[in-house]
Image (cartoon, rainbow, N blue to C red):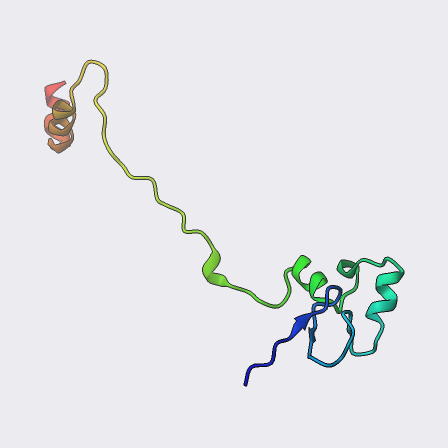
Length: 99
């Protein structure tokens, strides 16, 4: 059997049917604090504070993957890509002798 529960607008605790109030805390202070205009983000025991300060649920899978830059060769002014590849494939002794 599923029971429909509401959420307290101040503390975000569950309110079960038949309790008759819309703001609930375990000690009954949520209504008082709401009327004193104290923000729930400033109270450490509220869900709003926990959400603001990144406590509780931690998903490590949400980190974005960084892509590695792919290497590719371009032709230089005065030399084509084929010439560059040939020069790179030569042994260093031959390259010095050719120059």
